[in-house]
Length: 540
Image (cartoon, rainbow, N blue to C red):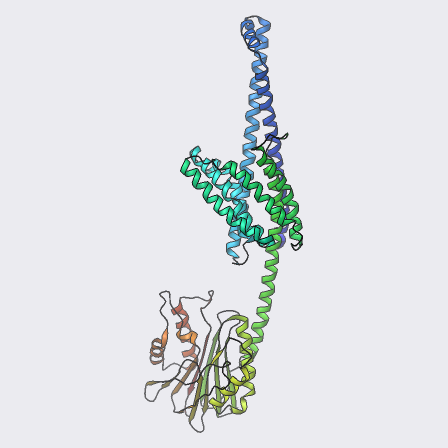
């Protein structure tokens, strides 16, 4: 796609220049014909006109009168043809500029970046200039009064996106003059349009607009050539286009104030040159952003692969325990984390952690949690001590971030379970022998913020048919379109109604239920990461 655009773009710019050049040439010819025709009529004295009329009866005078009439008709046809050609090319150029503007606006909306308004401001700028030509009058029928208000309003408004674009390129300017003029142009546009509506004369503020336009271009020039501005390739191109456009725009606005030797409005020519320079800048920025996004995507993919390595690559084999785990990140990388500690064939530790925040920063902290967890494996049979050790390792490393965690230790030989939590959602136990749900809320604060934090063990008897569910808050906080959370009640209801399923099938169905509740599909981003570990115990 990039190579195709690079091939098409010069052709489009060349087409604009050719169309504009042809239209200016035709308009020049048309104006010349009008001038010659008016000069010829004005040069006739009353006596000459009366003499021609009185002598038109003779054959020679009749022939001269016919020749004169033929010349007049020829001049009128040339005038009409020249005006028609100019209108056609103005319609083409106006349409083309409007299409460029709409395309840029559409592309900006699809590639929206709130901190980069260059593309959308450029699109609005082009569209307004195109809409100010005869193109819209050709495609849409409306009273002349409407078009007068239309053209005057656009004339007053068009500096606003221009200043937004300039601010994106060179910043707020010397002493914030660019940003100040942006706000002034907004106020002026509102005032000029309001005055025109109140006085029922849309062009009332046009002379004031001429003075304002001169001030605008002077401010832009000062900032463009201010020694303190950082010189870039974009700025060099913008300077070239701006100098040409400003010179011709000043000329056009001075025409309305004083008499100049060259009385034709050459502002459109300067605008076409400026548009060509702006197109170069916008396209260059667009592809730079695309390259930046591609680099970010590659880095995210690398981070995702690294994070996938810190997660268990396969299910741990413990006699009598059937495990199922699901990890669904809301982005390419996430802050949820789970891991297993296999002490031997009869003892297993399960850690589920949730880092505050999302994305790459959270994923980096989850890697730190992994390292801290591995360092505490000698205490894997003591959940409270293990969490205290992880907390000590993380304190002083996370700034304002924190981690919640739940650690479950299962001993199939002793038929015992230990659990400790650090600000984590409660542990759920489905006791098949009793057809009952038990909920365990551990008293422990978050990890990574308080060095003297202490954690407590919860001791549970392990019985055949027990199902333990350890999860992150993304499960219970998943919200539907109405803002209703999945919550603990629905989770308990699901546990009860699906108790007969295997651990794997139970985990699969629960994740599908939560995702379905949120109204998301496989192509949409979840509101939070989802992590779920299900551990079933069957006494063989």
